[in-house]
Length: 437
Image 1 (cartoon, rainbow, N blue to C red):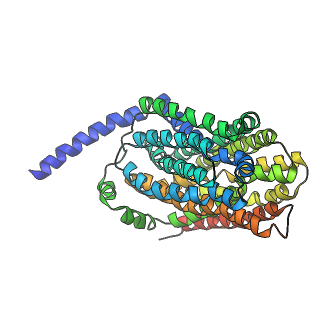
Image 2 (image 1 turned 180 degrees about the vertical axis):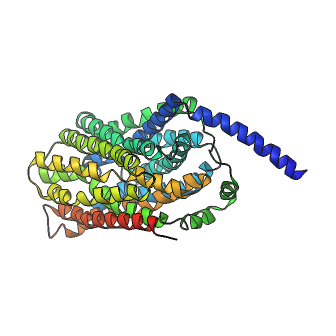
Image 3 (image 1 turned 90 degrees about the vertical axis):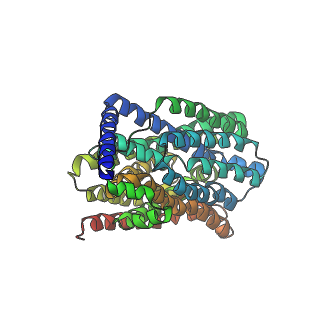
């Protein structure tokens, strides 16, 4: 009798799943969901990166050090962002991912607006922690939804399009932030940038449907029931999950370690006005990064022919090619050369995210996709976002007596070592993926 009931329940779940999958495979709706999720990611990075263009004004107004600036955009933000991402992702593997994203977007947008009220370092630190808490619920549930809406053949492209939201958000944040800051000041900029996300949270909630999880086998049922610690331990049994995660972490130490200081670098060492800096960085990071993000997944989907290691080798080569351009950017004196090199750096840097997540989601059961993204981002952001900007700020303060004019330049130069290490680890990940068990 029990077996009979289980059989009937399985048939009902299968029929419901088939109906939902048919709906998910409607091309126009899938594209809309991907668009909506990408817009959420745009808001994520507008609100996260707006500090980059405002931090010199904030430093001067509140009397902050480079170490404090590094903590604001680095470790203290990242520790809440990555730590809360794990339990939220575990919830996303069981409950409504759409609702988690909606609440998260509304929270981090509100905390961005609150940042404008800060009167000292502690105030703005608490506001940025609030942004990190909200953003913890953004990406892992979105990755899981995309992997349910798109098949393995097009998943890397879809995830790479979603990842373009990083660079579109950076473009909008830097461009709009630069002009608003020049005319209205950093406080009003925070107010105006934070509020639109709350409106879009409502639009997202009422127009996006929660997809059915496309696999309901026993393996995924077991993954739903396991504890968070057991799930994390299990992830590292899927080779080469750990290597891919640390490859991305070392790479993003460089991207955040240099990236979160671009505004200060161009203002301090090259004497550029803040609105011009915003325009230059929007072009180089926003456009260059969006192109590279799309290319990483698209080229991988086109040439991989089922070989997942190809995705990782593309990333490894792209990251390695950026190294000579990093030297040019840091030590060139010509503004066109600076911005041109930075543009191509971001084309090459930004190829990594879509392919990395696509390969990881191909390694793990469907019911572990959100948690796999969360653990991947935990490692990536703790080392990259958490330590990158913070270490650069600390080193800049420490060596300022030796290099009073260009301490920031030499502090940023340490990131080149992390770029090289990330490229090497990606190549090792590709080889480990194809190695016999």
